[in-house]
Amino acid sequence: MSRIPLVMLDAGHGPKSPGAAGNGIDEQALNWVLIQKIAAFCTWDSWATMLTRQDYFNTPSLTERVNYANAMDADLFVSIHVNAGDPSQRGAEVYHYGPSSKGSELATIMSENIHDEIGGRVRIVGSPSQNYPRTLFVLKKTRPWALLIEACYLSNPTDAAKLKTRTFPDAFCLGVAQGIHSCFHHLGKVV
Image (tube, rainbow, N blue to C red; front, side):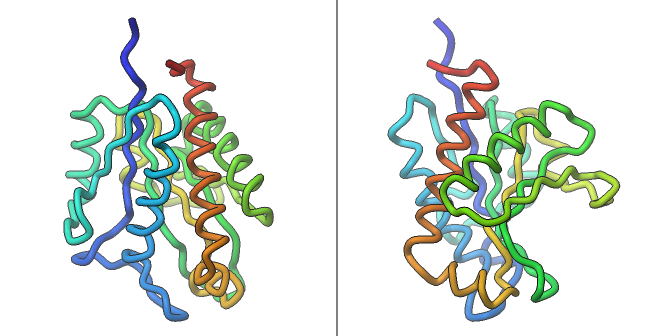
């Protein structure tokens, strides 16, 4: 009998590394709320879920997050963030390790599931790639397939307003949970 698939959920940043803030939103606090909702949605499926941050105040380093996912032999690593930048930028983004075609496939699957729930634009970004030259540490260093998902831009007033509702975060989190399910099916990790 094969083992139960494991998704490692990562609430980006933490109190010691707060990430972005703006329009009345604190990224690290919102990331924690979002990851809790995603974990709750994941309970209805037949895979195991673990969190890189064991409580709200815990802020593991990027290396500790990667080492934990690798040590637990996770099948999929999903890191949740909220983006910031130019106030004209908006929409969700799904990052994958650029050189990997499988990573690109999983990012596409995830983006489609998120789009089905929130509508609007969900951009797929390879890291590194021609359009995004930076390599995101957690995408490159985790052994499991890894995705980093930006829910939207807290620096954009329209996106920030959506984040403050109940419906948008719930829809986003449901889309991510359904995306995890679809990614496991694509990887052949179905119990």
